[in-house]
Image 1 (cartoon, rainbow, N blue to C red):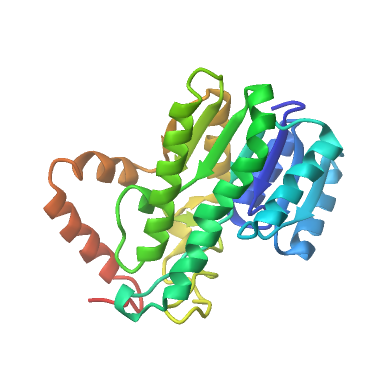
Image 2 (image 1 turned 180 degrees about the vertical axis):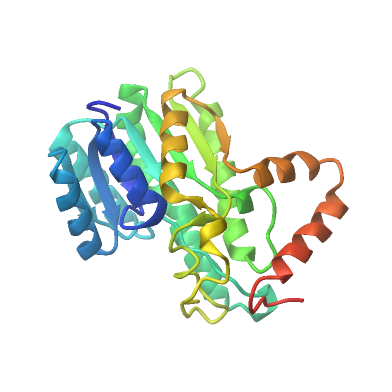
Length: 268
């Protein structure tokens, strides 16, 4: 990672923040993007204590013009892009029948269109460096999770987009990696939206039993170095991916049972 120019969206917390610190320790040049300027500034100042090659750019990835600005700032500062990590994302928890359609649109705007916008403007530079595009998806990106219809839809869309992009550029040396973390100890559940669009607040799951964001970051960066195609980070994810093809009805019932046991689950 030494002297690689890496853009990380959603870098103000969770997996994005952990990726920033780990990549900085490995000598990367970083551009951090998120909406929260205070958090970005604090993280940037902390990283500067051991790696001066870092800037931040306040960015709402749901807005095309701000994604274009992020890429332009990166080129103006560092002159190239080696790795784009599309990590920015929001989640939800509500039955679809109780969900305002604006919630679904918001998730698609951030999780899917944010990836598309950043990729569109970064792609010419990434092709010059034969670099890497990384989409941070989720187990919900290859198997539908009840109560997360909008989240699953946005992550499925991300996967389809990135897989097609990978094949389009098979002769160009472009590397595309899709990472599928399971439930990770981060603030994504705290900021998840209810059916009416209000923040969920307290996480309904036991964060202590989840994989840490720091461990996820190490695995993703190793996957970039090895130029892997896909990373399924948990045993549960690998199990679901494999057996959903063989015993889909049983997997559906198992997922329903597990998710219905969450505190204040929207379904029983």
